[in-house]
Length: 269
Length: 288
Image (tube, rainbow over all chains, first blue to last red; front, side, top):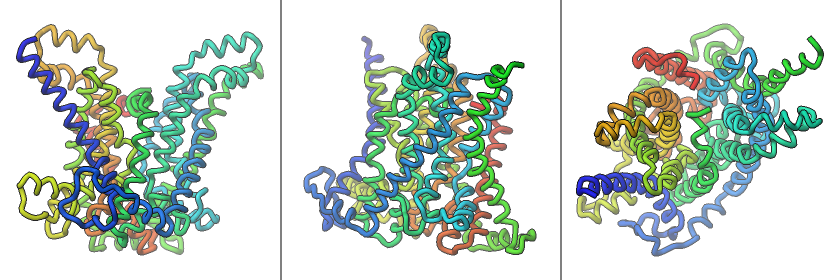
């Protein structure tokens, strides 16, 4: 190997490593911040190594008024969102994967454009409407809006998943006496389950992270990000750090499980 | 046509109907209502009252200016950063799967959380001051996030948002790179192109459609950043999305809030048309 090639190698791996540290550093630092004792919050300089770990800050955060109920609300909203978005989106994804039909392109455009609308433009009129029909300040109301954000994504992911499940298997089952419906249930659906699980995780992430609609549509029944956002003005910095950690940490697990499906999201079909 | 054949033809539409109805009810209808909220008085007559109140609001001009400044700073930074990351992952160096995983983590992090993460870095007793002082570059902690020095506040927001949303651009670009046949890369190597020459002359032109859709998608989403701004700058730095939020939550005025939301949609729409015109993106690429 020539010196030039070795230099080239070092450069490539060096840049790759620096970029990895750039992504990981804030996650590492918020973890230290969230697990430092309360009293050290305004110490300077800060400890860069986890030498004085303590659960004190986290306990203070979880005991703060409204935090635990808001985490529970967030989980309920996310589960409801998954239920609605998968129930509505999976059939559409299947249709896109299996059928050529008139209006197919128009439908794709509808799906793509609805994915682009800022949630503000939906949540403000919906807050007005939900007040009228009694859905305001309820987990169901928030879940309905989150599902509207997630349905386009579920359609895109599931259509990719069903394209990957051979339609010949389904047709073979039909020639062997299955109805179309039971061929779907017995053949396509079980094969699609890992992809559907990925769609469910994506939906969870959308709902877990969404803060604008959740804050606009609730008053007492806050979701977790809504609770943190509305407390931002008058909360201690340790409260913010603990909140940031609890919001961000699940991402490390989520992306690990979704990593195979990441590329289907925006680029592919 | 037999009954069975008709059922087969109607099946795809029956499968699409629930989602179409849902999206119409919860996205298209509210959009229309947002327009009505902005231009209709309580008696139902058309009025420019709400739009005027928005335009006369002290924060209106600042909000639009700040939103555009952030956009211009954040989007190019993300495109460059994501392009480097994407080429690294795509080059199949050892550990490229782990690189993709690490680079993609911020994809599942909200702008609120990203704002708080970087608050721990930029706050006065934070980690950046600790490192700078440890290296002997400063004598005492710098106040990064104060209204006195607004450029530093902008810088902090740009860093936080570039950190978070680069992952989205990365995913679009890697998907685009995978559509380019490997032969092109090998041919370029064969003709002695070095890494940088290969990137500029071979990869970038082929990646153009993905770069364009990344640019458009990222620009539209950049308009909706507000929680990171709240986390880092408080309410001192007005932006359009934040004003829509403030007018609804603090002033309880859904009319002005909806007006701001419409301004946002208008800005995003204008930028999209601008890209399509200036970059000459074909309509067919929008469907990607």
